[in-house]
Image (cartoon, rainbow, N blue to C red; front, top):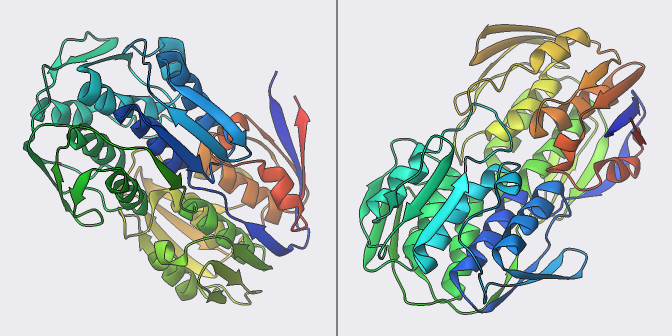
Length: 420
């Protein structure tokens, strides 16, 4: 039946909003638990759809996963009963492809249907297969199924032809138990990669270079149990900052890590957003005049592609011509058609570039959320628009943001969740 958001725009916002644990960090640690038969405790887990779906997949394999309390889970992969992922479950979330790494490393086999989830840019899985093959995996699948086997993974040198966070993390997990040394070149440097590596090392792994393009992994025979605290979600923190700036509101974003957002915060200042950084907070003040900018998305530490949509909303309120170039994902700018229907003045030069003429007054509309990041950005657009908006297909937004309407209500937003 589904649900939708009803939003009355242009309500004054103020107060504090807390950032949850990073979806893209917690997801990987749950998967990494397959590497050991010891118990792991995972803290600060966001209560979101993607996490719930992944827990279903892992439980189906035989993992014992217990929720101790909100955001805290006990995980133990002691009695794995199979190495084939349930096709109806794995096709719902793209992170399922990453399960191949730990399964191969510990059990020598992994089988799954082609993963689903967000379809932005179609996100090919070639890098995963090439990387695992370099470590000794053999592909036996067909056009619908990926079937990987190995008599034992062995360390090797693998150069990523393009940077991929998830492929980097998958190969780190696979190499952690492989025989010998693995060197990953042109690896992703995101904070989520560093967080995963730091935790694996605390459990007995031997990994060096996380946070740089070259990562060295010396395989070990087994890993210990451990406790992992999920790092703050930098994408959520940046999204809230864009909302505060676009609505010209004073909002304090708490429990975040500003060091993970240095480039994004620098861009906000260039636009004219007045903000203050603390050790674990960002305070956005009521900004007066917003200026246009030219920006390019890039892998970390550059401007995150996941923050490009909320930045686009902000730039509809800035004076002058802004240019955004999307270099990470194909097709990520198509949501701007919806913004034009709301009153924005955005020209798509090609699938990778848009020009934004601002400032524009936005008007409430009936909207269908296309994906996670565009979806939350359309919520921002509706909150600053004149009149009422209805946003449908909010299951996409729920994949990445925990009870977002309740949290926005606490800073004054007029947003309600209703049944379709």
